[in-house]
Length: 72
Image (cartoon, rainbow, N blue to C red; front, side, top):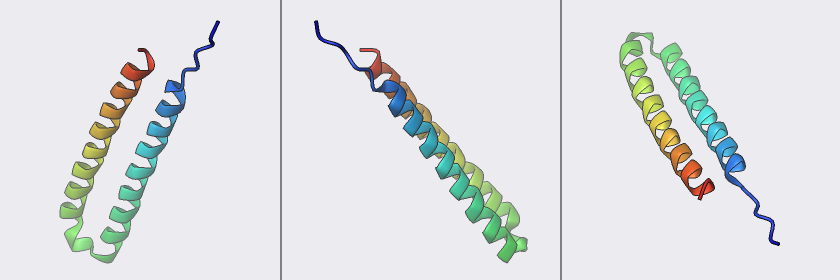
C-alpha cells in the first residue's frame, strides 16, 4: 500500500510567510518615504493600501489554488 504525502500545509505556510513579508516590505518602504517627504503622505498611503490589497488578493488566490490541489 502506497502512502500519500500531502504537501498542501507546507505550501500554505509558504504563502502566508510570503504575504507577510510582502506587506511588511510595503509598510517599511512607505514609512521611509513618508519620513523623507511628509507632504506626500496621502499619496503614499493610497499607493501603499492599493499595493497591500493586491498582495492580499494574489495571496488569497494562491491559498485557494493550494487548497484545491492539495485536496485532490
